[in-house]
Length: 161
Image 1 (tube, one colour):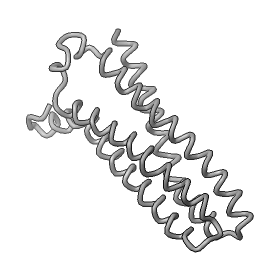
Image 2 (cartoon, helix red, strand yellow; image 1 turned 90 degrees about the vertical axis):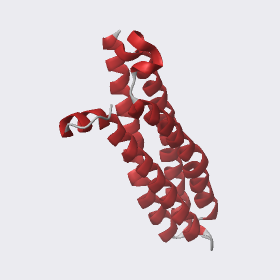
Image 3 (spheres, rainbow, N blue to C red; image 1 turned 180 degrees about the horizontal axis):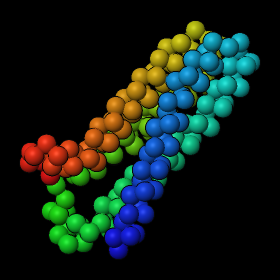
C-alpha cells in the first residue's frame, strides 16, 4: 500500500508541477495576444485557450492524486485522519482553493481575454489573467511549503508536525 501511495504522491507532484509551469507561460501568452494585431491576437488567444484547458485538467488530476495519496498513505491506514498533522489538512484545503482559483479565476479571465482581443478591454482582461495566475502561483507556493513543513520544523528542532 505504501508503494501505491508513493506513486500517487509522484503523480500529484507531476500534475501540480505541470499546472504551475503552464501558468508561468499564460501571462506571457496574454501579453503577446493583446499586443498583436487582431487576427494574430485571436490565433494566439486560441493557443492560450488550449493552455488553459490543460491547466484545468492538470489541477483536477493533481488534486485527485493528492487525495488518493492522503487516503492510501501509511499514516491514514494506521490512524485515519488523525494520523496526519495539521499541515496535511491545511494542504488538502488549500489544494481545493487552488482548484477553485483555476476554475473560477483563471479560466474565466482567459475567456474574457479571448473575447476582447483587438478591443478596448483586452488590456484589462490581460491584467486579470496575470492576477489570477499570480494568485494561483501563491497558493501553489504555500502548498509546496506545507508539503515540507514537518521536515522544516524537525530540522529547526521545533514542534510542528
